[in-house]
Length: 279
Ligand SMILES: [Zn+2]
Image 1 (tube, helix red, strand yellow):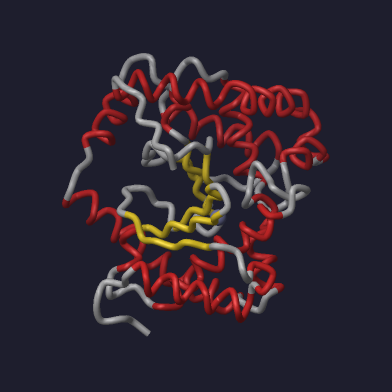
Image 2: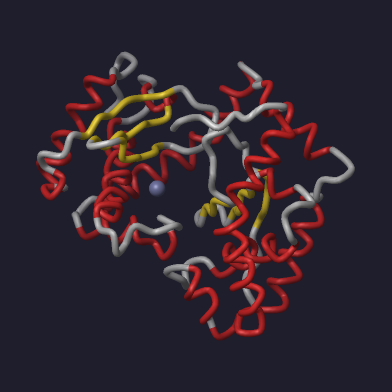
């Protein structure tokens, strides 16, 4: 079902409220605020706790009349599945998608049909829509990242792809594709892995020589081994990766301790100022 005009935030709030009533009753009574927000990132939705409220933000492009209702429902349900995990201090994970926890939560709530529909629609439409959006309005920020990635000190994607092949051979795993993510200032994660496309998108700040090689290896191993893990501890205990266990542990520690400040420093160098948003 496609709608006829751009969706409003008020409408989105109503859809979210009805989803809470039908599928997420433990969130009933929580002050959940939903809105569409213009973005250049691939990310469909975000959720954050802001004081006493929960804020769910959907990519502005999803408000377009040609986006099916089921896709919006799926993105809201996906964010609410994160919320269930966020509300539990034992499960509030640093890697909220690892091990397929979101898909499992949606399946448990009988929402798999929306996830399947959305995955097919997004696969067929989302990248093209975003490309059109970028082409229509090229961003100065992405041009600056491109200049940084073309610089002499930056790690080359061709070398990273070759390393991914090498690791796949070494550990007997199927190969993956790798590329630089189109990072916006709000993207804080080191990488994102798209299982359907077997595509690992790396934050462009990882191209900086300030980032040790082992951290790149960690992301590649994560992408290569994805689907067999629930978190980084499992990555270490995966028997076939046992020879990489020490590197994985050290790289995980670097990620926790040094990635946020390194990313800010590289962003600052690339953009000439700190672009960190409050979001
Ligand atoms: Zn998510």
